[in-house]
Image: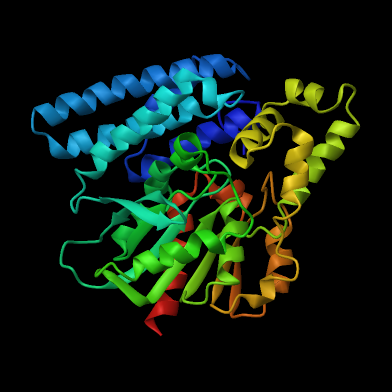
Amino acid sequence: MKFLYDDESFSFEALRAAGYAAYSGADLGEVLVTCRQIPEGDEEAWSAQWAATAARIERIGRNALAAGHRVSAREALLRASNYYRTADFYRRENPAADTESARLAKASQQTFADAAALLDTPARALRIPYEDTTLPGYLFLADDSGTPRPTVLYHGGYDSTLEENYLALAAGALRRGYDVIAFDGPGQGSTVREQGLHFRPDWEAVVTPVVDFAFTVPEVDAERLVLVGTSLGGYLAARAAAFEHRLAALVLHDGVDDFHEVAAATAGRAATTPGGIEALMAQNTMVRWIVRNGRWTFGVSDFDELVEAAQSYTLAGIADRITCPTLVLDAENDAFFKGQPQRLLGELTCQKELILFREDEGAGEHCHEGALSLFHQRTFDWLDTLLAR
């Protein structure tokens, strides 16, 4: 679904940023005026223009807060956080040494933290015990009554951040009476940037400590605990649920059976391109970003190591260990995992359902970007029905 750009990656990321308007994470006019100043495929202009918009909107939020306008401040700071994240998106050539990348990431975190404190029920920042360190998270509560509620444990995927998790899922869950514990696992957000933690295929080692932590939170109904994973998180959450059986339900947004297929397909394209992977990266924004982001988040030095590392990210021989009811989502035009949700569905032996989001309803893109309300409606209606039983 083309949105503002011919470049497939720019189109998708602009749509992603704009889609969060559903929960005050963007204004369409701000997206349009920012993107019209960014030429096709110009990553430097992308970062500079989104950063400028983010700073402008942050100033609106800071001024509103100083004047006592709580709602206006919250909404502006949410938009600024999303725009800072978007500004940083392509800065992956060498993030560890990129001071501007670090500044943008920190600005996204801080503006969100300040917005989260202004929610009707302010969010609680968390440090979730994990091995010899902690994982950052937020506890979002539907209200301040202290009543135990069905609770969603939520993490993203290959490039998600804790701050984006509010807009991507938590805001919709809160409106429907769910509490949410959102967190960054290894390889995600601040864990890779600040702690040097990288993705791991045995994601149950990440989710089980989060479940343990959830059981200590009085507002969590331990009998109605739901795990949701987005994008690569569709593999990660499924892998965790195969070994962590205290979950009442699992939602794969979308279903991922084998991440190695994506890496191998990129390797195949590189093999037929004169100049190999470096030439392909120079020609294709999406491939360039996939490789650069993968090197950083997986902790590998080159593309060959990334392909090798991805071999462990498969549900073959594991999917049938999932015992909780599972909702598998699928996108008709998924650019990354096309066909994998249906294959995964066939491997599941638990109670299961697949929902296909179609292009002709505006929801066919990867993770249904641009159709956030429809995604939340179908997902939470399914959960409401299941948990009511």
